[in-house]
Length: 236
Image 1 (cartoon, rainbow, N blue to C red):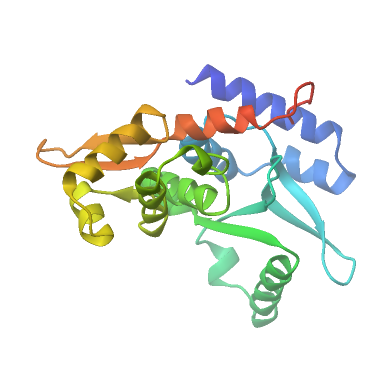
Image 2 (image 1 turned 30 degrees about the horizontal axis):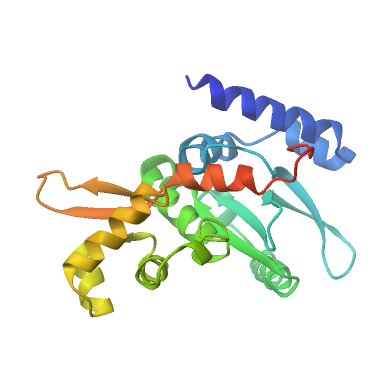
């Protein structure tokens, strides 16, 4: 058992219950295990902290009614992210036409209102957590997380490599980078080595040890987020 995760999860849930409306509190106390599994298997390994996550986040629709999202993520950065966990059970198999249309309308309204949205299937969370982690990190990078504030300290090749990483869902090989950027492999390796040294990327060797690929570093995301927190503020 990961004691660090369990402590962070308990603190997050206790704070949410204390600061909730009655309906949100009821939902929190009846929290679905799928939501905890997402945090334990996807969010925690990828990000490393649960700060700025709000479970069962309450929203108002355009008619003033209450809606709830599984998680809202609102760090001190200029974007807001909602995360939904969907299980392929009776909720989706037997959903009415009205409920189906209402769900799509709800999603449209969230996007119009300026929210970013990620939806994960429970089967993917339980069976393919690494793929979900990559999707999460890619979204955070694309919407201003991992690379935000770093590019002013990078040279033109390093910036180009980071943009290329975003286009390739946070994972790339030196060969592909050299081909798409039109520069030598030596220049690519120098840029990747520098980004690894800065903690922005992490190298991974294939199972057979014949090839190397690079991914965004989750530790860098955690560290950069902590550095963005104003001194004296409280993490929630």
